[in-house]
Structure formats: C-alpha cells, structure tokens
Image (cartoon, rainbow, N blue to C red; front, side, top):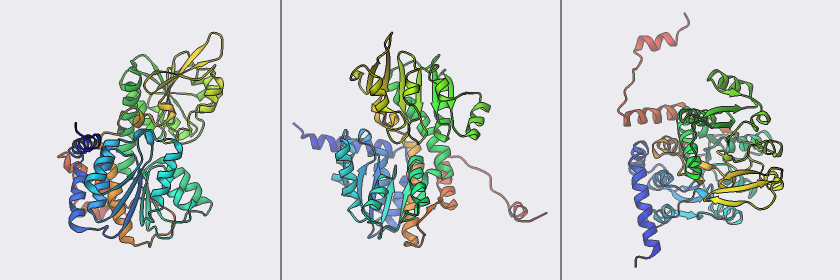
Length: 414
C-alpha cells in the first residue's frame, strides 16, 4: 500500500500543476525570479489560504531566493495535499491543517511570526497583528495585505499611531479590485453556496449585504442565475450605484423578511443580528463571504435556537428557532468564508492576477530596503499596469497606445 503521505504529495503536485496551467502571468514572474534572485537572503512569512493557487506565489518567492514560512489564513480552506507537496518539493515550512481549531490556528500564526521575517504577505492582518503584539516588527521591510477586512484593521491601527511597518494595500490595486473581487469572489461565492446546498437560485430572493467590489460581483452572478437581488448598504454612494444597476435597495431589517438566501460581504461585524434572524422565513440560508466569521451574529443565532444545530448536509447546520410555528435557519460553513470553506476559492485564472501583484510588491519592498515609512501605501501604478499588461498578453489581447502628440496633449494646458 502507498503511504498516505506519498499519496498526499502526489495529489498536491497534481493540484498545483492544474493551477499552474491557468496562471501564466505568475509563471513568467516565477521564471524571472529564479534567474534574478531578487529576494536572496530574505525571510518571508505568509498567512494565506493554503491552496494550489497559493502554491504558485509561494514557489515564486522561494525560487526568488527567499526562505518562506506559510500558515493558513483559514483552517477550512487548507488543502492538506498542497501543504504536503510544498513541504516535500519546495522546502516551504507550512504550518496548519484543514479543520484546525482556533487554538491551533493561533499557534501556527505565532510560530510563523517567530521566524523573524523581513517581508510579510497577509490575508486578514492576523500575521501582521501577531508581529505587532509580539513587538517583532523591527526587522520587517514591509508587508502586503490582500483583504478589505485586513485593511480596515490596519487603518485603525495606523490611526491610533500603532502601525510599526509599511503595508502595501494589494487589495486596492486597480487590477485586483476589478478582477479578483468582482469576478473571483462573485463566482466562487455562488459556487460555494450551490455546492453546499444544491439550491436552484432562479426565482429565489438573494439578499447581498455590502455592495463593494465583491458585493457587486456576487449580485451580478446571482442575478445571472435568475435570482431577484436585494442590496443592503450603509454607504449612500454604493447604495445609489446598486439602485442604478437595477437592484432593490432597502434596510437589512426590511430585507430580512424577504430573503431566501442571505450573503454578508461587508468586512464588518454583525451585518445580520438577532433582530434580522427573528424575521427570516422558514428555510432561509445564511452565508458569509467576508473574511472573518463575525458578519453573522452566531451567538444570537444560537440564543434564538431551541437546541444545538443539526448537520443536514456537509457544511450546512440547521438551527430550529424557538417560535410557533418553528422556523429553520440554515447556516453554511459555520459562518466562515463560504467560497473557500464550501468550494475552492477563486479560480486560478483570477489568482494569477492577485498573486502576480503580491510577488511584484514583495520584490518592490525588498528593493526599497526599508525606506518606506510605517503607513498604508498604494500599489505602485507601474506594478498595477504591468500585471494587467501581462494578463492581457496571456489572453492574446492587444490594446492601443498613445502617440507622442497625444501624450503631449495630455500634459499641456490648453
């Protein structure tokens, strides 16, 4: 019999190869890194979802000369076979396993933080937070942050005067937001909900709480499958955009009685609370596409329930609400990010852009040598444009260029 570890490594290699075939931009960067060694001698710590797509950027960093330590940004997203292949084939120190409890999850983050990194790649600001708590940011040249949720936390730290290292907001790059958030999360969130429930969305009312780039993508995909979409917002500008796009816009308390499927994607806490849960229909489905499991008030859900939930399908917990007649609410993936917990996250073609940005920003931070001030920094426009250009080239798409006269006109006051 083939040992399970050998089977796991083999499965991980196959998954990585499949993802690689759909990530040509990152492959080109990885090839250049292997030649030029821009990260030679640097220690890189990463807290990312341990998936086949993540293996692409981790290998780019390692082949660029870095010593890489990786921990999971979400235990339910970890693919153990990919972790096994990274350990065996690429000498990456991977900590974490699928289904780790909160204690183990925190221990893995602390262990990676203890590697005294020069560069940090984060997805949710947990690793950056651990380094700050341990007061171990002195040697950090810079960090990247991949999520809106993480940037909210880091901007709060910056406003308090506590941010001790430069952080580049990869999540806010133009190529990232228009491509990753809208098309990646939009598709993969709906994919996760359908895998978990096998629902027919056509004819259902889907309530999307939050209309940022990610909310836009989810709403677009749900409508494309025939659902009626309701948007809930606290910001009047995206709320107006949603209305102009043809969606119903209303307060969450009003939408609570209307919806069949609820998807939170706000980046904040308590988007769905007890007062919303009390109004929901029998059989309503609750899914979270935000980074942390705080957008649905889980303690309130447990308090309303007559008893512990039943697992009616894998990753579907059904809570019976204590009322007459009783109602059932179905929570997906324990309130964790549904596109990774119940599906496979973004398609590799989307992560090609995200991780190309991460790799090039890591190179940029290495070259600045710690000259950037401790603050939140935008992705340099040259990197943003280069990634978009490489992605278009991989799709065999050509675009126009300005001639000298056109460029001069744009630089001249007339």
